[in-house]
Length: 134
Image (tube, rainbow, N blue to C red; front, side, top):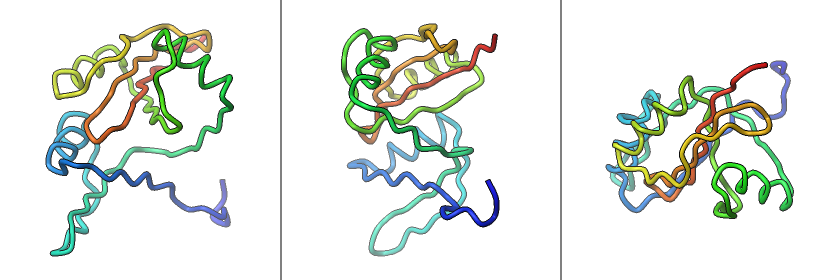
């Protein structure tokens, strides 16, 4: 990607019912660094860093296949957040202890990664994945 790319940053904006709980989970439990606090008397906004961003566009058939592989059944809505982590097993445990509901424990996928699925505070469904290599 060059400096002339039409999009310079992908920012996922999540509206949550419990701001404190969501910030605690994503910043303190998951470990995303706080980049900025744009809060004002009109509302609260915390910007967290989440590494490199991509948009993965899949069709219905692929979404159903991914859900079957990771969870065993169709569970995701039209948006699911996938986070690459060093150790999906340890991260799954840490996030479960921190308030996420584990939908599926880490599973080796046909695309050679170890993927877990969680429901996280703020209504996001997360896939944690660790690339296993060749």
